[in-house]
Image 1 (tube, rainbow, N blue to C red):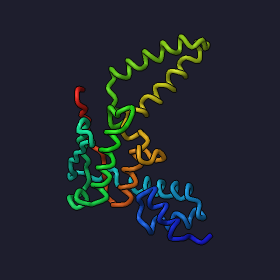
Image 2: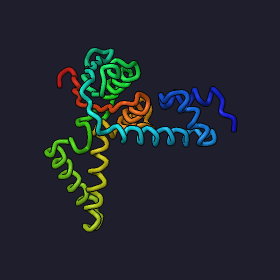
Image 3: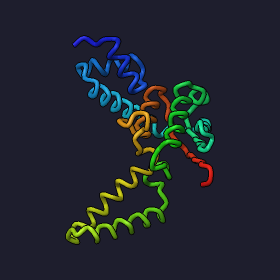
Image 4: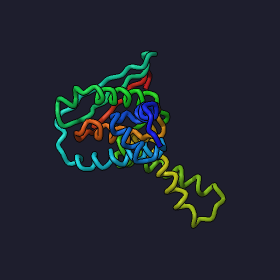
Length: 199
């Protein structure tokens, strides 16, 4: 199948991957857009894994204030070099993540599932235990029901696990991994804070 410039442009629009990588992904997947996206993700993950142990002593803090002036976000991201921190793609991704944090519902409360405070997890588990008891299902199924709901809860409030609001096919973690593949440095989200009037 002939790979057209329009196909490459469409894939780039969905993934922000470099044009040559988009073309290669489409060639490898026979022009299938979904398979091309998977190919790019796998390649990004492989690149990111190789760079994961490299020191990230540079970075920047990005701010975002929503147009109504009632929601604001501060985000800190780390990278290996000052050159990367000044990179347009790096800064654009930071802005996108800030906008995601401002808009996400439920709002993220931790970077990853491992970072969710234990007291919040205990409170959620207690709620799910009560729901399992009220469900009318046999008691032997309760642990699986509770575990499933806990996993769903963790994914819903951990920033890196959340579907990106501008492209729900990507998680925030995958967005960052794609950036690592594009720039070629180890990059990580360090921390974030969301402010809302009255909270």
